[in-house]
Amino acid sequence: MLKHFLGLLAMTFMICVFILLMQFVWMHIKDLVGKGVEISVLAEFFIYAVASVVPLALPLAILLASLMTFGNLGEKFELTAMKAAGISLFRIMRPLTISLILICAGAFFFSNYVLPVSQVKLWALIFSLRQKSPELDIPQGEFYDGIDGYNIYVRHKDPQKGMLYDMMIYDYSEGFQNATVMVADSGRIYFTDDKKYLLLRLYSGESFENLDRKQKRATRSEKNIPYRRESFAQKQLLIDFDMEFNRYNEDVLSDQHVSKNVGELIRSIDSVQVLAHERSAEQSVTLVESRYFGRERKANRKLQEDALGAPIDKVYNVDSLLNQLTPDERYRAVAAALEKAKSQRDQIDYNSLMLNDYQRYIRRHEIELYRKFTLAFACLVFFFIGAPLGAITRKGGLGMPVVISVVMFIIYYIIDNTGYKMAREALWPSWAGMWLSSMVLLPIGIFLTYKAATDSALFNLDAWMKIVKNVKRYIQKIWIRLRKQLKTFAKANS
Image 1 (cartoon, helix red, strand yellow):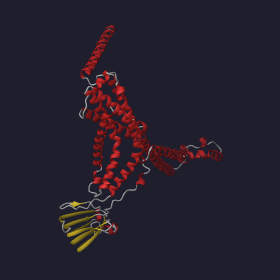
Image 2 (cartoon, rainbow, N blue to C red; image 1 turned 180 degrees about the vertical axis):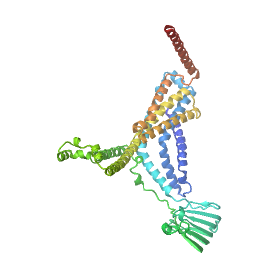
Image 3 (cartoon, rainbow, N blue to C red; image 1 turned 135 degrees about the vertical axis):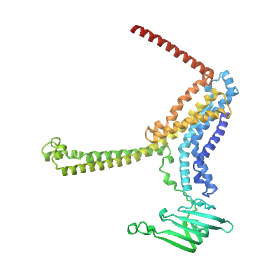
Image 4 (cartoon, one colour; image 1 turned 180 degrees about the horizontal axis):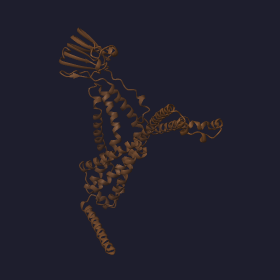
C-alpha cells in the first residue's frame, strides 16, 4: 500500500506543482519578459515560486493520489479480496494514515520555516524585476515606449551600421503639456560605460519645445503660448536608463506577515494588541474628559460648584442661556458649536483610522498564523475524502479521479478563499474564516469514510431511485392522511 500510494503521490505532486507554477508564472509574465536578466536569476525565481505553490499543490496531490490508489484497488477487485479475507477498510488505510500524519507534520514545518524565507526572497526578487529596465529593442515602423518619459519612432534600421533613419522622438519626461518633439534624418544609440545612461545622438533634424513651463500664467494671455524651434546638424541626449539588475532590500519585508514563523507571529500579535489597547484607552480619555460636549467640566465639578454656589445641574441650562443671547450672538454661538462638532468628528475619524491600522496588522498576522495549521490539516482531510471515494467509485487511472479531484479542489478553494476574505475584512473572526474550509470538508470526509467502511452503494443509481420512491410514497401517505383530516374537520364544522 505504501509503495503504491507514495509512488502515485510523487507523480501527482509534480503534476500539480507544474500546473500551479505555470499559473503563477503567467500572472507575473510581464515582470519576466523583455528584462534581459540572467538564467541564474530566472532559475532563482522558479525555485522560490515552486516553494510558494506547495501549500496548494500538496493537498490536491494527496486527494488525487488517494483516489487513484483505492480506485485501482477497487477496479482490480483487490479491495474486495482483502475485505473477503476479513481485513477492514480502516486496517487497509492504517499505514497510509500514519504516513499522512508524518506528511502533515512535514507540511507544517515547511510552512513554518521554509515558506517564510522563500516568500521574502520571492517578493524581493519580483520587486527587483519590476524595477529593472527592459532591454532596448526599438522596432521599425511603430512607436517604442520602453524608455520612461520618451516615445521613439524609427522608420528604418540598419543593424550592420547601427543606424536608425527617419526618427521622431517625443520627450514628455516633464509632463505632456511640456513635451518636446524632435525629428531627425538619422541617429545612433549608445550606452555609457556604467550601463546607467542612454546616449542618443541625432543628425540633421529639428526640435520643437513648448515654453509654457517657463512662463507665469498670470502674466500672459491663454491664447499666446511661447515655444522654441531649433534646427541642428548634430544633437545629443543623455537619458537615465539603468540596465543593471539591482536587488531589492529584503530587510524591508522583514516585518511583513509572510516572513514570520509561528513564534514571531504570536509575539507580533501580542505586542501590537498592547499598543492598540493603550492607544484606544488614550483616545477614550481624551474624548470623554476634554472634548466630548463640555464633559471636561466634570473633571473640575467641585471647583465650579463652589464658584457658582449651587450644583451645576441646577444652574447649567443650555436652552435658557441660548435664549438670553441676541440673534447675532446666538448665530455665532451655534456656528462655534457646529465648528467644534465638525472638529470632533474629524478627530474621531482620525482615531478610527489609527486604530484600523493596528487591527489590520493584527488580522493579517492572525490569518497567517492559522494558515500554517490549516495547510497541514487540509492534507489529512483530503486523504479521508479521496480514499473512501476511490473505494466507492472503484475507478482507477487518471480519468474519473482527476475529475473528482478537480471538482473537490475547486469547492475547497472557493470555501477557503471566501473564509479568507471574510477574515481579512473583519466580517468574521480570523480563526473562523481560516478554518471554514476544514470545518465544511471534515464532515464530508467522515461521512464518506463511514459509507466506504460499511460498503454503502453511494453512487448506485438504483439505490438512490429506491430512496426517492420511498420518500415519494411516504409523502403521498402523509398527504392522504391530511386530506382525510381536512374532510373530517369540514364535516364537523358544517
